[in-house]
Length: 205
Image (cartoon, rainbow, N blue to C red; front, top):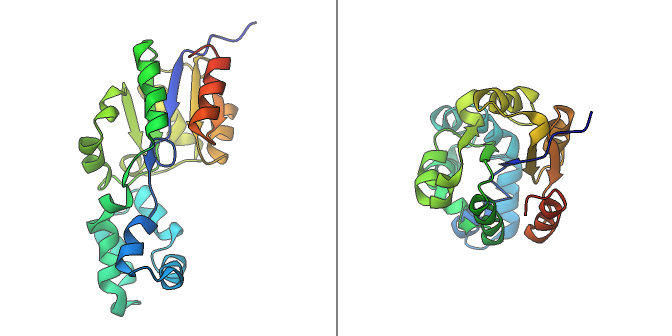
């Protein structure tokens, strides 16, 4: 049996549509001392620590975990949540243009992103193109995160998306692989230009 036409597109957000990196904030807080900043991000506010917020932990609990151990860096730790918006200096405009073109073609659009339930709402208000999506699933609101297949199933079931009609785009190669295992067409995002070519090959652009 021939596969269904790929007519629905699902986007990851950070690294695909939004420029996100804690270094955008901490470079300022460390006054340009790159080595000290990298030590802090490698040993205090680590990627693993931040992912717990993406999986549903509150920033209050996250700070409470670290401050007793790193009391002299309490202000730097608290800044992660309080000044999170500064870690997202803007959108990846070339990818936003791809979304706009898909929208103009009436392609159903969705987003699936690992993000804290606390820090996402201000971004949703700040970046108006997020209103273009027909639905958004945020890991911090669900309690589990990509690459866990469960969060993909939440998206598919909540919005009644047929896997074999959908495309999933993410900058972490693990996630398109999981999407593909569920019947979606996975695209590993490398650049807006390459994405445009891949969507064109699928007949979406």
